[in-house]
Image 1: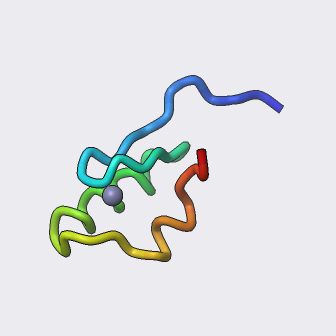
Image 2: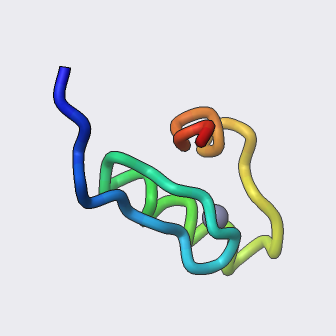
Length: 47
Ligand SMILES: [Zn+2]
């Protein structure tokens, strides 16, 4: 298993994502709703 070196960060809430699509969705959601979607957060890295 290889760890990705470049993680994507949601600039709104600070969560880290491995996949760009989720980071972008999170950022768009956070910006629009001023809160996070549990469904999207489920794809974030726990640490
Ligand atoms: Zn976010």
